[in-house]
Length: 370
Image 1: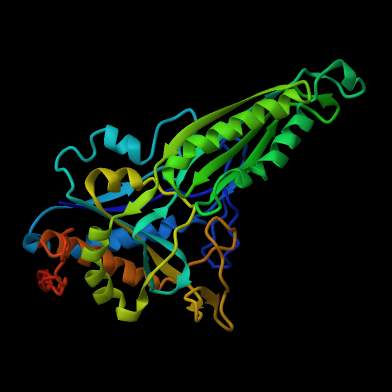
Image 2: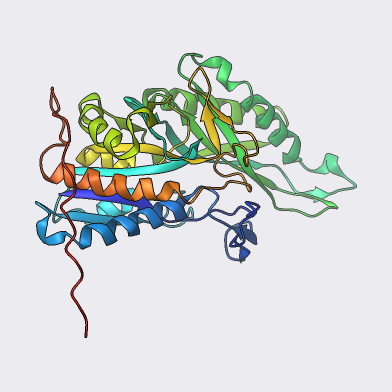
């Protein structure tokens, strides 16, 4: 049983990709909004590729030696704080109880040359957790700040201190704490009572997460106290790292190379991005890779660089993120061939994985309609 997974959710990001189908949707209900909405992380590509693979494999379903689950997962970017969602919620709801997958496979589009497949043995993506920091002072009129406690300077001190946290852990295993959203309950002429900071804590090594959280909590509490305020740090929606094991990678490489081409399958470095597909892969086994979708080439050191007269390299979550549609064909084929090779026993982890030299069974011509 192989599960092919695609995440489906969009982001509160304006769409400036320049395409004639660029999103102009606005979400008025998202917390902190209204926000413009777009697929600035490429999940529309993921959904399209999995739909394509479902179309291909359904045409040969009577010749597949096993079961394929097509998993369209919501809330990979994280559900609203007051709700449950994402990969862990799907597992807990029994989505994989019957049948139980023997492999999960997925891919993420990335600023890399079109059609290139990237893999990594070990942590492909880091561990992450959402952090909510609430700084509390005492509300007062803007003309009498001495009669209250302004949480703003305390929040500023916390932000400044966060920028130095990386110096307190080993530089060989990177970490980052990023604040992406600030909420102030107040008015231009009122010193408000609270300021809330929203962000993420990310570590390349999962075991570092507890130490970074401890240090961040200490920083938050002491920085606020220095300004007469109080503050708390709450950690929500933890996501484990995406880890590809050596045996699984060895099993998958022949399939990747057959689909993408020998010279278009490359080993990449890890990133501090996160993806809760890790909840599936760590439970059931499998692989998660990247697929290049942009106007790029690899330089002598193997790093992606923009090609002349191209659209440049634009990272995910940027308003200008774009994807070359021609890469989607590679994604469809990769899904389909990985599924078939696993079901026929060629793409399974073992000490010496055989070459996955098989081909998808030939399609039968469609029935003639009259």
